[in-house]
Length: 209
Ligand code: IMP
Image (cartoon, rainbow, N blue to C red; front, side, top):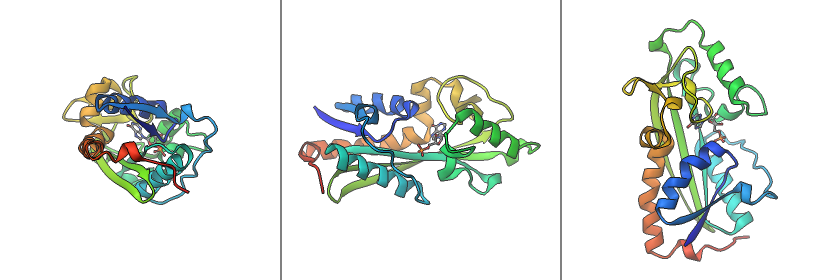
């Protein structure tokens, strides 16, 4: 069995990745299994660069194929904010409740047609020196005026999908993965992972540097 390390401590993300990767035959680890791994400063201006930075650092530390997700919410009325700042929108602690409250305050009084937004996720896989790939996924929705539902994480209780008449926080894990930015990116990644396994690439991953 090939081990893959998720370059995150975010339990919401880990839950969403685990089922898909275990189905492909991977043993899944996360940064909770590597407590000495130092935090990566996510200072790039794009999801892609931040994802690559996290995946490269995790690979260098663990020597194992490493998968990072950099993701966030882009609100049209805010010119694409919070974007890469989604986690720390309301402050350095990355508090979901405070982030959602700040978002509601900024959008106060705006009608539904002006509350359009999308989630975006970029996944980066690094399995050797210079051996890396990225895939992405998006999901379109509308920011509600108050929270609905208790599932998921982050902005899920405010992110409404009109075609489902549900927020992301009202969906179970399988439903969310079928429509979400991360779920779509994971689907794209699955085919590539299957090819890499067939070619024996991931078994030969080794520490660089
Ligand atoms: P990252 O860890 O820097 O990629 O930050 C991702 C942040 O974007 C999370 O902390 C959430 O605030 C937000 N986010 C990303 N994906 C989701 C999702 O699926 N649901 C809700 N919020 C999300």
